[in-house]
Image 1 (cartoon, helix red, strand yellow):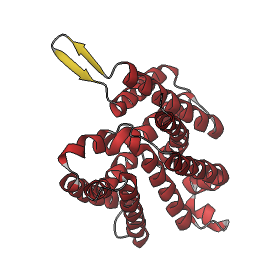
Image 2 (cartoon, helix red, strand yellow):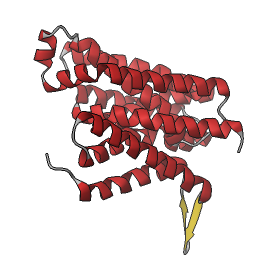
Image 3 (cartoon, helix red, strand yellow):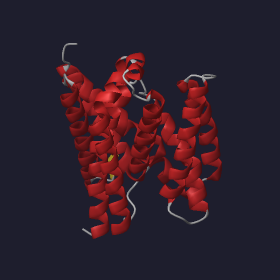
Image 4 (cartoon, rainbow, N blue to C red):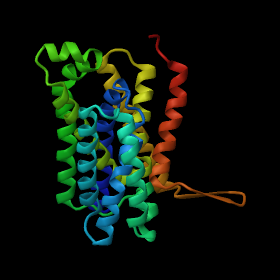
Length: 266
């Protein structure tokens, strides 16, 4: 196996660890649909980057950053709720992304797939994963306090607004890291579905974060194996396309169904 493929696989597995942790906090913050919606904000950037022949993730990062700050700004002004702001920006981004993305690249942008990854970009990705994990490890207690009681958090000197923005940026960074393997349409599933699995089987914050990350890593690992071993499966006259993104998401969904049998008491 080429080194570039190894880099891609390792980065995907590391991203899964970060995605499980981010998804756990997103679930507690009731942002379960935000991952799916915010991932589409990257589409216009992906489309522009593909048109101008630059790294698609650079374009995706630019529009994700812009969209995240815009959502936070609207939320702070209090004119619209966060879900409404995300919904408006989502529809605009999806339309713009579909228009701008070249038709031959649209499927890959939506559903993902490994492309050669240089050592330099691999190290950038590892640094991004490390940033996500370190932030959540250091801020987990403050995040929990803002989730349980924003007023109490503010009374204890926590800048709730700044912490919310920081989490949104970390959330967007995690989406960006997952775009290569799952695409804009499915990357949100890597954040939310494993966290839903962790919520079913774990009690306590540490076990919740651990179970979510393990579920995400298992989903990615199994999805990669399925994609490499059986990229296409024929059942009678029907041919199934087991692309990487759908394969990972399908495994995560199966894990969630299995976890329902092991649901812990509240």
